[in-house]
Length: 421
Image (tube, rainbow, N blue to C red; front, side, top):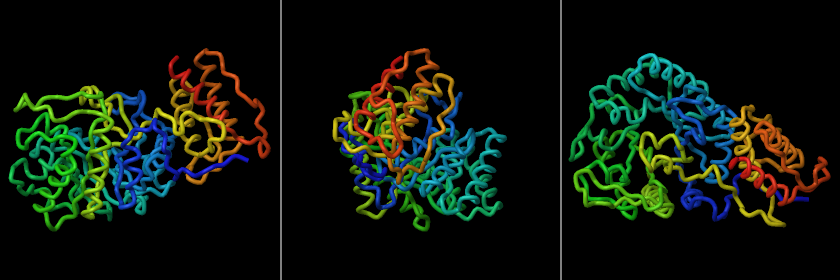
């Protein structure tokens, strides 16, 4: 019979981004990952929005690759409320961000939905944030009343989880240096701090140019600056990271054009995430690595580096190549389900109704799972008007057929072929 392992087993596949392994080695101290499901052609600005099946499969893949038990979620509208439901099913903790902007109707709907989820899932939603970087987008004078209204509504609704508003260290320092107190903080239970040397290197003239090698020290120093300014409030590094590409890409500082300290690469991303996690763990501090998956839509907001913040690639396979004798693991099923469902949606089909749909941590791979992967993929080929592939052992007998590496390898090859169509 085939050997199987649960999703908790980490892969040593060289195809995975280096930072994925860096995180998988240090998640136990309560460190989190920022999770957004807008991969492939999904776009939060224009749609389409990811369906529940894609959110489920991305969460399974995230847990498989990193071992994290905590995520920071973004938004609760447009179907994103399912993130909380899916996390609950998988025993994950969630720091729930209620997206806020200047549209009163959208804010009202967001707060109502976020409040309801926090009250429905008190064991899953451990903290709540009224917005993320609202002050960065709209300035302190506009942001603070928006955030305060959200905080007041959550408390009026009886939300018991600690409440904050996540923002950059600069906004928590009241846009002053040395760091000064922002009045909004007095009404909050904790302080969520985002720190990104990459953007400091481009937009700020306050600190010397910060390389990837110095980024971890910078991240922790800015968190400690804010913590010292708010000694009565717990603080958390709610976003930190480094872009993995385009490889070798760099930009100059707007105040010091000769400075080019930020260099994008997989190795630099690994260095920043691993070193920051190590410092946080050493100091007993909490953080969340930004971000799980790479999102193409961000190019329109952040330029060339926008699609490269994710460190858990959704478009590579674990244990590649599959050779005879490779143990068949549930992570292999998780990867194929996601890629096949994305193809089905691309060609006008609904996500497949998988048996044992997750959480997949204890899935034992059986003939029925491989048969369903084949059927779901063949339907996608048919919808794309492309001849379906043939497979070895065309009849998989439940309880009889041993699942082999060749079965997984064939499915992977077929997925890649249709993705390139």
